[in-house]
Each structure stands twice: as C-alpha cells, then as structure tokens.
Length: 501
Image (tube, rainbow, N blue to C red):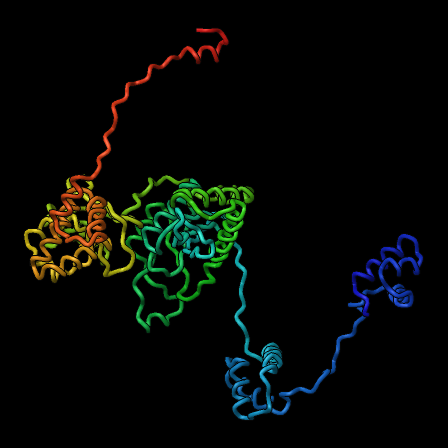
C-alpha cells in the first residue's frame, strides 16, 4: 500500500519529537523501511511522484483523430458527443458507448492547446455608492406556503455591489409595480441614494425592442419605459441597464439572488416549518433574515452610505391610476383583462388604482370595488351580483351570455341548473335558475347553496319557491342579552399594596 502525504507528515512530526524511526513509523502506520526512505528524502509522496508520460492503454481514436482534428479546426463549436456519434455511424462496431468520455478528454486537451481564444472575464472594482443592482428571482426551491397553500411568487432583490448590502420584497410578477415597490422599499430602508439604478433588459424597465439592424450596433440597448424613468428620476438617480443578452453585467445581483435564497433556506430550516399566516408575515421573516446578514457587513456598508446622497424624495404610491369608462356590459378593461363592476356605474368614468396584486375601483372618491388583480391577459373576473338584476329582467340573454359560466358560483349551482333543465326547457329553465341566483345575491349565498344541496340530495324539484321555503326556515341564532358584570378594582389594590381595600 502506498504511503499518503498525511502518514508522512505524521512520521515527520514524530521524528521531530524523539528521533526514533521505529516508533515514528509505528505511530504513522508505515513500514520501517518505507519510513527510512521518506526521512532520508525529506519530501512527501506527492512531491516524489514523477508525472507519467506514457499511456497505460492504446488510444482507441488514434486512427481517426486526424480527421476529427480537421473537423475541429474548421468548426471548433463541435461537441465531443456529436463527433462520437459521427464516428459510430461511419465505423459501425469500432467504438463502444463507454469510450465517449475518452474522446471528451481528448477534445478538451485539444481545445486547451490549439483551440480558439476564449472570452476573458474581467473582475471589476466597484466604487462605493455608485450603483444599485435590481433583479427578480423565483422562489420555488423555498417551498413556502401561506395558510397551507403553496405560495407561488418572486423576490425583487436589491443589492449594493460594493458592500453586498441586500434587500428583498415579495412580488407576484416582474412588473413595473413590483419594481417600484422593491426599489423604494430598499431605498427607504437605507435612507440614502446611489447614483445609478441598474437593471437587466426586463420589460418592467425596458419595452421597445430595437429592429434587427439596430440590435447589431455595438452597445445598443433597449429604450427605457417612461414610467421607469420617472421612478428613477423621482429618487434622483440615473437609469442604467446591461447589454442585451449580457446578464453577467448584472453579476452581483445574480449572485445576490442565490445568496438571499440560500440564507432564507437556512433560516427556514432553523424555524422548523415553511408555513406562514400571510404574505406580510413571510415578508417580515425575509427582512429579519436580511437585517441579520447586513449587520455582518457594517464596515463596508458604512463606507458605502457615506458616499451616497441622503434620501430626500417622498414615498411614491404603490399603484398606477387609470381612468376607465364602464361599458354597457357593466365591465371595465384594465391591463388587457375584464372586470365586472356594479351596474349603477355603467357609462361613468371610474378611477382604477392598479396595485401589483389587487385593484381598487373608485368613483366620487369612494371605493366601489376591491378585488384581486388577474395575472396575464385576456382573462376576466365577473361577479354575478353585478349583473343578476338585469339578467332576471332579460332571461333570454342568459343562453349566449359571453360570461355565462361565471354565473355558476359553485358546483351546487351548476348541478341545480342541470336539474332544472330536466324539468323545464328554454327560457323558462333559465328564468327559474336566475331567480335562484337572484335570491343568493339578495340574501346569503351560503344559505342558498345549502338549500340546493338538500333539494338535490333528497331528489326534490329545484325551484325558487322550494329554496325560499328552506332558507326562510333556517335557524337564526339570536344574540342573548347579558347583564354587564360589576367590576371590583379592590383586588388590584391588594396586589399593589398588600393592604385590603
């Protein structure tokens, strides 16, 4: 068995103590003769080993290598797997799949000795306070849940390259609203402002994709969104972006993305579970973890803060306001999605506050509707309560109503409609169902649904009168009248003074 460097180090350590080869060899686990050899040489086994200059087995590609090298000279981009497949097709039975690894090593050696020049990465020296870098990163690996449900979301990560100060906010998409919230949350946490705000070419910051001939111009970048420029100017910064396709220019925040998620993963492991009560509690957990991490960088952060300007701008609202007219269908269209609103607003212009995760529809300064914002485009959110009053008066419109499927708030209502169709046809069936839906909008949907479940379970005809009979007889819990208790504060005086009241 060959001696290891560790054994020889132990041998030398023992020899320095007492100088007895036999004892030192025994304690190092070496033969006496082997020990004498290394004591005489005064070197480790790795230092004595001469590099091997011969092959231990024949080169299986020796015959075809000149042709392969010629191919690589003409087109260095060929991969070893592609060339190996070509060899197997040209010479059936000559090569085995296990020899691919040998060819890969041979080609890697050729590239290092005779291949084309490679791109050199030039490490940049960051100046304190010069720029912040902002990017979005996915969080699927963290497996966070909100009230037991998987929470699909992103993080908007803000980092200062010089000090590696980090901040992150929870967001649902790579939108301008998310970018606005992430940037200003970090700036107000810092209380200072860098000179530049740097992003990649995401649609949140840039949108006008250049023409093909323009894109070939060296140094060309996509133009910034006007709203993003307004955001950056509000905080007295300058907008800066990376070259198209050159994500390594945002390398600090890319590395920060991985570091933030790694730190959160460890914090979640310490916590013992990944479930949170709300989005706000999860974000508070993130901020606590990042404050702890930033505390370890205090010296460099202080240096960076000293080079930055004080934050003097006011906090921007976290929504975009749009003026939209309510159409005759009692719907509005916001960011390529349709939303129903109360029909009394038809023809009016409403003010819509578009948040990243929700909408608020306002008229006359009052909120008329607040709902979750739809993601994507060409989607719709229709509340039957907004249109049922008109549908009852015009039941013939129900059959081909564009949003007909939204008129079934649950499976029970859908099953009830199918049951009604078995007893009535056409507009009569539609009118009976619409009256039941009208009752749900006028009273409690849960009571109507319970009545429908009961009628369907018992096989009784589903009619609005039957539903009314059940819901009107539903048990109503009355709040009992309680006498207010008399409060005697004398017990507290006893506790405070030890003397009876």
